[in-house]
Length: 151
Image (cartoon, rainbow, N blue to C red):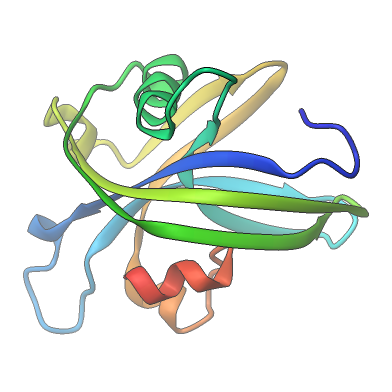
């Protein structure tokens, strides 16, 4: 975790599953992790990834985070852009600079999973595929909101 008042640099991976969209009323799915803010009592979703460590590029951080969290290798990695996110989580202010990449999984098994439970330190987290229409409509909350521009 980061210290209060610190700006955190993170690398996130947008992974789409276009195979899922077989009919017109279904959007593409994206692979996200589920989070929960106990203060706001609100569930939210975010692309997977994590903090960039000193001496590491954001691309290296992206690959390392997917490897550490779900033992997944990425391929076809493309840089999409940089987002800035100032937010309140669990009653505490946060500030992130997000390096956003689009990529694919090397192993096709990840496209067949509905949910994937993994550990992040002490916490159990869930990664899952979510229909982009549910995010765009606001039915499910995607953070940061500017992320919607890339869907």
